[in-house]
Amino acid sequence: MSTDLTNLTIAQLTSHWNQRVNHAQSIGVTGYKPINSKFKDSATALRRIEDLESSIRAREASERVVEQEAVTVDIPAEPQQEDSEVARSKKSKKTRQKAATARTRASRATNGADSISGKTQKFNDLVPEAKRLGVPARHHSSLFGSHAAADKMLKKLEADMAAARRSR
Image 1 (tube, rainbow, N blue to C red):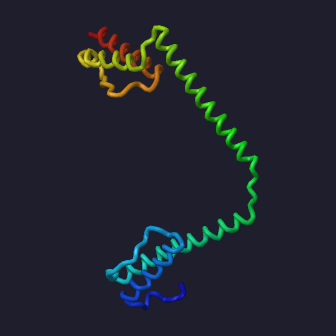
Image 2: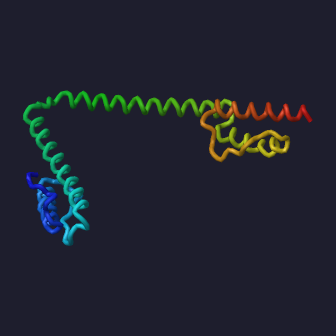
């Protein structure tokens, strides 16, 4: 941009804006539209034009980089095959992990232990009695994050309630 834009009138700045927007659209820069009215003031016009020029420079620079990479880089066909094999193995690993997690959860539920939702419900059922005993306890609206967390909270609440009963 060789023109000194600070000396232009608002009408000239608007005309310059519209020309640059047309150029930007021709090279694939989106998000800018020509305007039919004038800018509110020259400061706004200069700021918006600078933003547009920055986008144009960035687009032109990225096109130059892409052209240079296209000339200098040879893409072999075999690494794509390896990448797909790696992706396939990652996917199968995730599937195996999900299956193992499901088996673990199922074994916990079938070996006599309560589920997390059952433990949360048990905790919530104890809250009113705990409050009557003066033990600070809050109702849990969401499930505990794990069996260990649920067991820990249940054990603590039951111990606090037992201590409150003994002190009465």
